[in-house]
Image (cartoon, protein in one colour):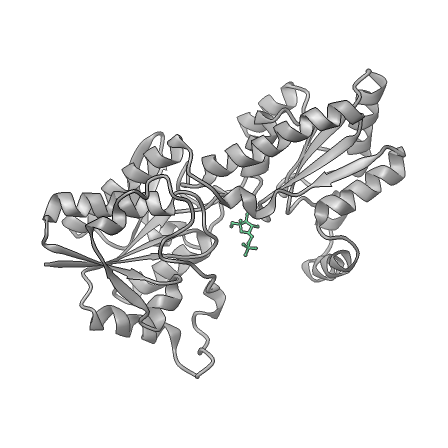
Amino acid sequence: MKRVGFLTSGGDCQALNATMRGVAKGLYHIYGDEVEIIGFEDGYKGLMYANYHAMNRSDFSGILTKGGTMLGTSRQPFKLMREPDENGLDKVELMKHTYYKLKLDALVVLGGNGSQKTANLLSGEGLNVIGLPKTIDNDLWGTDMTFGFQSAVDIATNAIDYIHTTAASHGRVFIVEIMGHKAGWLTLHAGIAGGADIILLPEMPYDLDKVVQKITERTKGGSRFSILAVAEGAISKEDAALPKKEYKQKLKERAAKYPSVAYEIGAKIQEKTGQEIRVTVPGHMQRGGTPVPYDRVISSRIGAHAAEMIDRGKFGRLVVMKNNVITDITLSESAGRLKTVDPESDIVKEAALLGISFGI
Ligand code: F6P
């Protein structure tokens, strides 16, 4: 009998259930009734405090299209993993205790950057861990694609599409703020797909004058409106030059004045152009709803691959997609590294050729 634990960790996304279904179907196919799946509740917390339940075939039925995660999730920052919990207990030891008490043969962790760092830590402690690449940000190092990303692109693009029609009617400048604090993949893809005029990414600190110049050029050229796709982590070139500590302080001051970055940029553009600005923040909608078919396909493939890895005893690895091939790399290779948008990449150059301004 094989015993496999599942947990979903960090921010949720659309294809978590679809991916767990993929692993489960693969395992049932390989082992028939000779496999037991244990679902840990609310991410690593469930593993720490032994909150789990046994799952069966029917749990994985009818969930391919269901967003969210049937196991629940929570953020358990990696940097606090080595700090004792509120009762003074060692979190890593607690997790190991649950793993060994349940006599697990493997632990499957569906998570993004921070979660995979913890997966790597647990693997280093001797647990049989397999990481699966989740996040709407697509910023996990080592994989071309994470599940959740394309579904979020779909929603963020829809938001820009809707804004397009109202922006055209009113002749206003609209800013759509898109999720992604450190990586701009979602903003870049949704911005291109939604026909944004200006895209501001964390990886490409913007010059406000260049942004204003683009808007002014469009107005002079007869365009009644402009649309900006702005990442949550968009940063001006002045702020990017600040020492980390000073920038953090600036962010605190900004939070007291504006709800988020898009409002700050909007106020500055309004001041410089006198144009009417409106801001839209789709926020957590971008993580909600049903996974798009692309995500259903990669989650199913990733899940099947993970089941095969369990059967082969291939642990301490992260399932990734490379050039459309589902494969795996060591968790340690990916841990602590972020996949960000390269300002010199083809996609950025092509977008610029389309006339999209990055404010640089
Ligand atoms: O990592 C996924 C993500 O949605 C980011 O794009 C976003 O910056 C962050 O999570 C929001 O986190 P929370 O759900 O904790 O507010």
